[in-house]
Image (cartoon, rainbow, N blue to C red; front, side, top):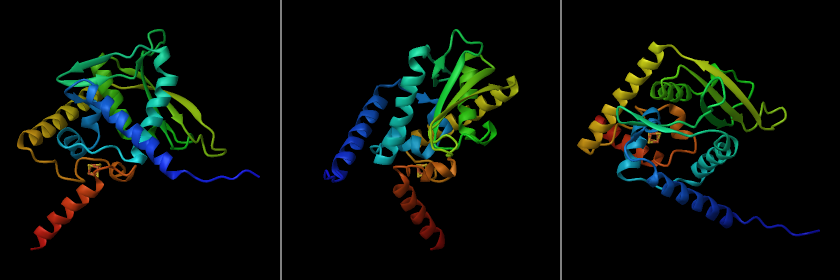
Length: 229
Ligand code: SF4
């Protein structure tokens, strides 16, 4: 029998290096406001721009899984344009120039493949509609890699959904994004973080968990104490 000993230190070091690499590649991406910074938690976007913390090991794992799979499954087959509208960068995952629906967004998830598109995160829909606005498309393909399939058995499954939106839906979504851009920029000018737990989906705090969770909890506690005194 061979002997085994778990090397937790090495695993943590690998994740730490991935987190550092991702943080470095973040610095080289286009300056300015990105769609994802507006769709997801504005408090996090503020801290990322003013006093960023490195990704924690759980976040490094989640991010690298998504980026790695996207690189293997999409990039070789697609053009990956990056446009800008109204000062918002729109790094579209891929334009499938040979397909009937050019705009493609790729996601990987631990959600079960048995879930229909209406059960997938609303943030994905918002992101795709933003890309629709930027690329003047009203149709898109959402390619979802369910890492655990439907859990019976837990084996990866790729599903593609065709999505169509109206002009009004795309326009309203863009106006919502512009509102959030104004809110974030106003806080940056005032050098004051957007209030914690107000500008995010609840799962954003606990998935990972978010690297700023302790800071947000501390700020919330201070506010609660002040409100009582
Ligand atoms: S802990 Fe929650 S509220 Fe705070 S930055 Fe993270 S996602 Fe936003």
